[in-house]
Image 1 (tube, rainbow, N blue to C red):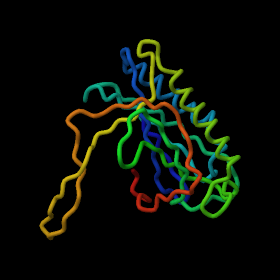
Image 2: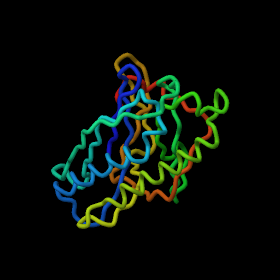
Image 3: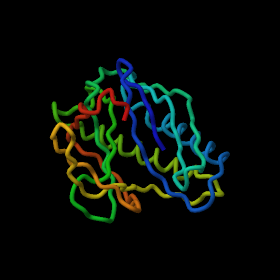
Image 4: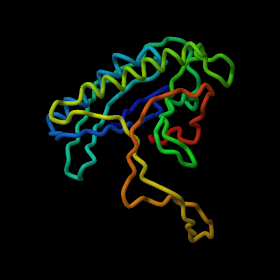
Length: 211
């Protein structure tokens, strides 16, 4: 599921979460599920973010085949915290716990549109705010899992790893760049829980790219 936003000055922002289902997901059920995910964000998360942010749409794509269901919920939901927003490149990081250990970055989600009152210091988030945000995030994910249509149940939150390692590619200019190697078969890990990094994160390199 892709959650697509605009933040201050119309900058695009997006995060993606993966969910695994067991049964069958029809087109009609996909629409029902994505509508529920959209409603879960509106019910659980709006007060945590600056009112300069709007969730514009949620896109569900079934990855079982290239002809499987795809559905979109496109009801805008504006966040409601009226405190002064931090810059667009500033984010809070949701960390996902999985059973597998490996080197490198582990699964995480960057959330922008925080506000100044959420800061304890210039580079750390307020502990009380983080505790409340974690409760809201866990409820948001639980709402999505509990809303899985009966024919597709049960659902599990997962992470999907498509790449492992790198190889060097030399471009005509002579520049060499490390390019990720795509796995033959993606690795799917069940997410066991969430935590939040107390340090302020930066998304400056991704600004305006509509990731």
